[in-house]
Length: 231
Image (cartoon, rainbow, N blue to C red; front, side, top):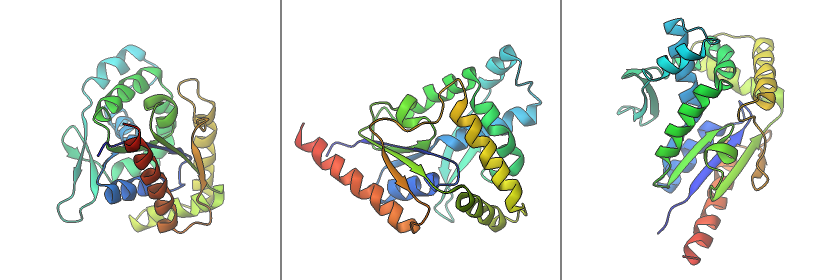
């Protein structure tokens, strides 16, 4: 049976990553966390003290950036590795969250990471989430989903996620961070966040997690069935 590419875009805190992971698991597909790739790049630049306005330095340093994903043998969860080191926890910190949109809008960074993402998806059978997956990375993806949700609901979800990891952050700070990221992501010059014309929008504000996962899985199965009938 032929496989498809599933692109999930949307705002931070809508449940894109967790949904994409669950969808990939249910379909037996590979999950690619594009957001983690940008977060890993941000962490790398912060640790190296890279001047984000120095394009020559950025281009040189990004060649030293190796990002990979591995499943934790104990939890079964996919985790992010930066140059061979597990960085799943530090890339989710508020410090990285405060800089990731600035890093993501840099043309040279986006071009390099998009190229790597496209290579990952060449064999199909992948689910990737981010902000420009259906518009830039995989514009010809067989299924495109755009996820959205109320800002305060997104902030409460992010706060719980951070609390579960032992990080105490006020709801006000998270709302401010998400609002700023929405503004930067939607208005940046390079690959701005917007809904592709052929993307199916899902508002997750009042959906249970399993409901939003099942919606995407049902859409995927419909696309897979249609795709296999036409080949």
